[in-house]
Length: 262
Image (cartoon, rainbow, N blue to C red; front, top):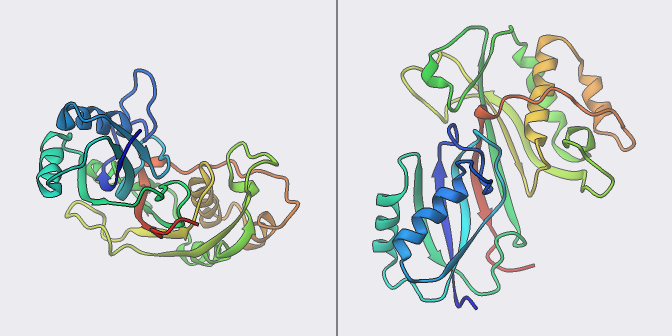
């Protein structure tokens, strides 16, 4: 029976990982985190539980997991330093805080903000590849910005949920959906202009954001119009979106927790 509970926030570059969830014979974020914890904690029995899954190649500016321990961490700062020293270079722990026993990282209310970073119209520096998707087509950004705003509010996102079924929670509320010029992520090898799709919600379905982004790209190419997006969000719409945007442009920007259980 675990007696001590901690919320650990981390960030990672997902380009060489097969997502968060442990999978046989594959390098995943959870596998590397647990391997490091086992070394750092020694004989202290532990279990870790992520706030959610990320796909292969998806990165995180701020992700989180809950750490369950038999014995307390007596010096959190020393533990954080030791944890970071032993984590691989593309994973970094940001903070560790003790939480109450009734805190549940899955069930506690939370808001997730995702960014999809992209540029278009040319082949750009290869160093961009781990966190930025390049679309070679010429895109109508103004139309895409109008399309992004249509996702805001409570809608039926069944068309944007991979292999969705009636059991899935396809009605979701998007608190924020906007496409803006990127000023968040910078590097001297980035193209002169790049863009962000910013989405904020309490939850997203499997591949939902990448399907939403893919639909906006189709809009920007002129392959669909704004009305088709409006129709896709209506109850009873049965056609599934098919263009899943590449994973490497997707970044989990932040998770905000309500520390009180529902």
